[in-house]
Image (cartoon, rainbow, N blue to C red; front, side, top):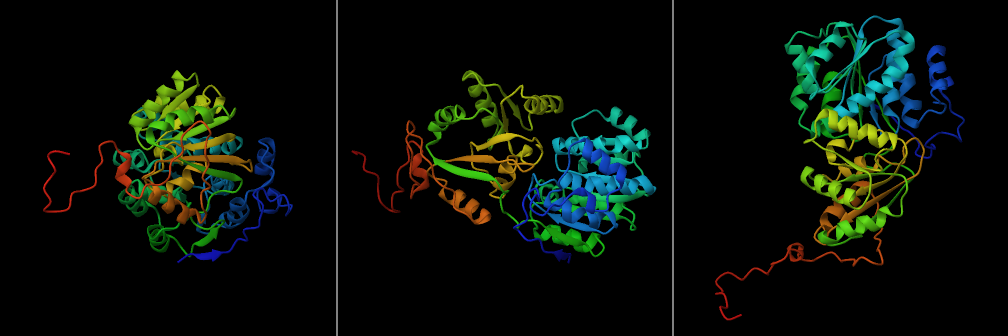
Length: 416
C-alpha cells in the first residue's frame, strides 16, 4: 500500500502565490539551464511533489489529472540520474501519440547530455526502431505490445534497466494491456526504481503498486475523477439530428483550436466531412487512420493548419497540445471516466479552457454518471436557434417508430 503525501488543494496551478520554482527541488544546474531555455520557470503541483522524491531513487505513485505536467515530473529525474549512473530507463505509454510526445519531451532534455532515445510504437516500421536500438539509447519509450515484439526478436536487453515508468497506467489497463504489463514487469531486474503515473487509482493500480514496487510513496494532487482547474463546462440537450447544426453555430463563436470527440470512428469520419463542407479546416484521428496520417493530423493541429481535430477516445490522453481553446464532446463518452480525460486536453499549463457536451434526451443516466465522477452538476445551456430538449422518461421514445410495449396476452388492434 503506497504511503500517501497529502497535497492541499489550494495550491495554485502554477504555484505563483507560493513562489515555488525548479531551483529548490534538487535539480542539477545543467538541467535548470535547459528548463530556463525552454521557458519552464514554475513547477506544476505534481512536479513540485514528485521530482524531489524521484531524484532520491524512491518508487513513486503519482495521481494527477491529465494536463498537469506529469511527463516532466518523471523525465527530469530520469535524465539527471542517467547522467551520473549507468543503465537505462523504460517508459511505457498506452497510445502511439502519447509515446511520441513523451519522446519529444525527453529529447528536449537528453540532447545536452549526448543521450539517445528510442520510440517503439506499433504501426511503424520495425527496421528504423531496430536501428535506433543499436545506438544503445539510454531512454526507451514504448507501447507495451511493440516492446514485447522487440523482446521476442532479441532486440532489447532488460538486465540494465535502472528506472521503469508506467505512464497513464489506468488507461493501459482500460485498453486491455494488463497481461503485457505483467509480462514486462517479470522481465525487469529487481533492483530498479519504479514510477507509476495515473489519473485515477483503481484497485488494479493498487495491486501493481503492492506487488511490483518497493514501499512506493503516493503523491495525489487532486482527488480521483476531479476535472482540471480553469475549465468551464456546459451541456446542451438536443436530438441527435440537431447536433450538427448546433455544432456549426457554436464553432462560429471560437477562433482558437477545437478538439472534438466522437464515440466511433465512423462518426468521426462523418463529422470531419461535414466540417469541411462548412468551410472549416479539420482533420481526424482514430484507429482506422495509419500512423503517418495520425501524425500528420496531430502536427497539422499543433501548427494551426487545422483548426479542428476530430478524435475518438484513442486520443483522449494522447494529445498534449497547449492552447486548445475548447473541447467538444459531440458524443458523451461510453466510459464516464473518459469525460475527465477528454476535457483535460484544454486548460493546460495554467491556461483557461472550455468544455461543451452534447447529450441526447435518452442519455440522462450517462450524464448523471459523469456528474457523480466530477462531483458537480453540468450546467445546461440553450442555443436560441436550436430546439432544446428535456430528458425522456422512456429513453427509446426519441427513436422513430418507437411504441410502448403491448401488455403480455393482449392482441394487437388490427384496425388502429
